[in-house]
Length: 226
Image 1 (cartoon, one colour):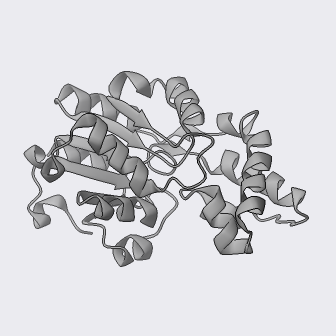
Image 2 (cartoon, one colour):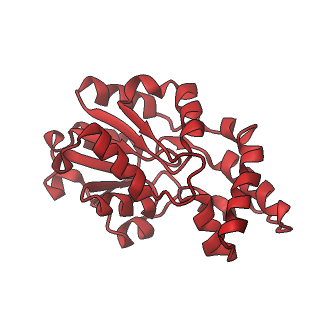
Image 3 (spheres, helix red, strand yellow):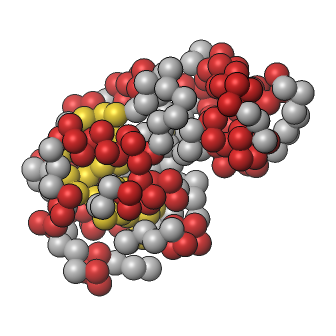
């Protein structure tokens, strides 16, 4: 375990905290993997083990389809359309916040932190989920890609948050569970915290150079509050 104090991290160091959504604030595997399963079936690809489809959580779906199945741009975008057929009707509701997340956001907000979400989930879907959880009252900004965007990366979304909030990069941190979150932080020259309770692994987070790694929501809360 790498603790904030070992890296010289103090409470005052983080004035702006940017969170990933899936696997960091929300347990979203059921809705995402079942919608991916539905999408793949449209292409004649049958996958009965939903655990194998958790790799779709985090990155843009088009990227995963190209990397894992060799889809071209057109076929990958058609996959997105099939995915949305199920996700926007049912999958969007097959999720829940991790225990302790709302309490953490409330404490951080009360301590004067700026809080934001940077996600690869399209903005309209993200807004539905955040409002359903009641998290919107704690957040200064929520940013996801335009639904029609075919090329927005996690780094792009993190950059949007930084620019819109006018963040001081020295006091801004990205919190996420997958390597895409760590890359998004590095590409924007901010610190990163990897969480192990989501859908990534310690090996993945260490390999991509997370500045700090925590195992639980409680450890994350303690670190961010100082």
